[in-house]
Image (cartoon, rainbow, N blue to C red; front, side):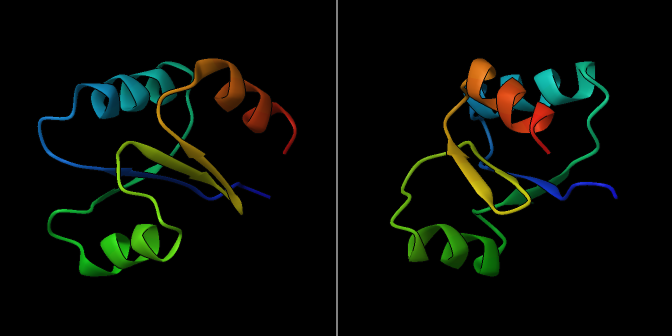
Length: 78
């Protein structure tokens, strides 16, 4: 069963771009939600008291920031 992978990002966010490149290089399919224009995405982060990007959601796991080791572990344990 495919995992649901969502990147919450903002324009001109260098760590967001690194995260997306990291996922693309590993062949991970993901959806991008721009919190500057997507009110539901912004509210999702706000409801979790998250005030920075990038944020990666892998199924129900939330990873704040670009943390390659934690991301690799989360992708492997699915």
